[in-house]
Every structure is written in C-alpha cells, then in structure tokens.
Image 1 (cartoon, rainbow, N blue to C red):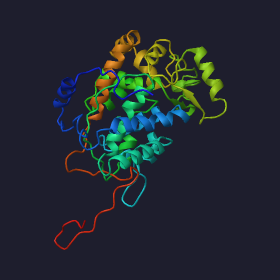
Image 2: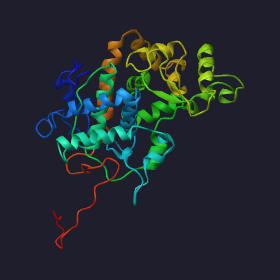
Image 3: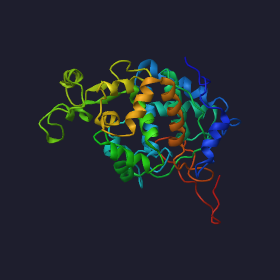
Length: 338
C-alpha cells in the first residue's frame, strides 16, 4: 500500500505561499493536526481497499472533487442528494452517471469513527483525490485543509459550469479562466484522464459525421478509432479506458497519447490538435518529462482546491455527506438547544 507520506514536490512554505495569493487563504495543511492527526492514513486505507475490487475507484473520487470545485467552490455540494429545498447537482447533465459516492460514504464512516464531527466532506474529497493519485503511482502534494460543507446545491451551476467532453479549446479555457485557472492548469488537470474510463456516449460522435462533415474526426487516429468502434459496438453505455496503454496508472502517457492522436474525448485531443494553441507546447513538455507533469499537477490541484471554500463559521461539518445536518431546535431566545 502506498503511503500518504510519499515524497512531496513542494516544501510547506511554498504551499503556504501559493495560498497567500488567493483571496481565501484560510486553508491550512495542518488544520487537523491536533483534532484528527491520522486523517490522511485513514483515507488512504479506505481508498486502497476500494481499489482492490474497483480499479476505477480513484478516478471516481477525483472526478467528484473536480465537479464539486467547479460549482460554487469546493464545498461538497456535489454529494447532496435531492431533498426538500435541495435540487441535486447529481441530476445535472454533466453529473449523470457520476459514481463513487459509496466510497465517500465509507471514508466518512471511518473518519467519523476516529474523529467524530470534525472533518468535512469537502476536505475528504480533497484528501481522497490526492491519495487516489498516490496509490496509482502519481505524485503527492500537501493538501490545504479547513473547508466546510455547504447546506445548498446548485443544479443550474452544475449544468452550466462543468466542462463538456464535446467542447473546443476556447470553451474549455473560458470555463477554467472563470476560476483563475490558466492554460497550464487546464492541461495539467486534464491529465487526470491518465486513468479511469469513459462511456462511449461521450466520444462516439467522433467516429463519423463529426461536426456535420460526413467524415470522422480528423484528429482521431484511424487505427485507434477502429479499436474504439469495436469496444462501443455493444452500446453507448460501454466504457473505454482513457489511456489505452496504462489504464490504471497515473503517468504521463495521457500526453503521449494526445501526440499520437489517441485522446479519447474531443475535449482531450483539442489540447494538442488546436492549431497555434499555447496548450500544444505544454502537452509536449509534459509528454517529455513526467516530473514536469507531476509538479504542475500538484500545483494545479492546490489552486483548484482553493476555489471559494467555505471556512470558519460558514457551512457545516456534515455527518452524512449526502444530506445536510438537521437544524437544531431553538429556544425562544434564539439559542440552539443542545
């Protein structure tokens, strides 16, 4: 089992320096040092167990973290199910079919047993994402902590804010740019597609009549296209590996695949195949040096994880990640009844 104490790419003072540059710099890597000191190891253990029976467990968890942060910030709103007053983000087009909530439940249960009413679901997603990458052979980074959980969801935001697998580079840049994420962040974070799977429904439009041209997508390697068509012959819900070479390893092969026109999604391949784009050079740099990718990925995960978190007295620490805590009854004077 890989340890959460894997070699760190950035000393602590560098991480803190990154955080100071953001308007919400209340997050602190040592936030649970006294209240839940074994937290990373608890999360690591549960994720490692999930991976024993589900090779996609890590990819599911990091996708949840991504889809959480891009809608009203990293506040675990993506985990909320439908309830009175809550229209779940899980029903938004970009989240339909999203998986991994059961793994989050298992992590939360283990954390609550060790540190009751202490750790937010938003922080669990951030830590689980890092541990998922480490366990797949990828980099480690210091995760700033102290997020709290929202009591609301934003289905409309999930519908409009999440990147689509069918989008061109300009649209992707615009969606990332809203949150202060630049082209390097876009290319680095897209590298999370070095592991995991995607349903054929998200890329089969590239096989024929692409963009109403009566031709296949010219940026999709013909031999790879034929391979994908065979995989997808059984239906649109069939899944294909994002990386046909090392599907469950976190490595730089995502970028070498793009160079060979073997990016699975249109939104993957446009990073390399958009003529004159600044992302092409970044793809080439990451394809050449895995260490460059790993370093940038950790930095970009920190930036993404710091998108408008709830901190201090805002939000709550959910006891069940799928629903908000019941409101406490109040006295006539307006004080909470304990």
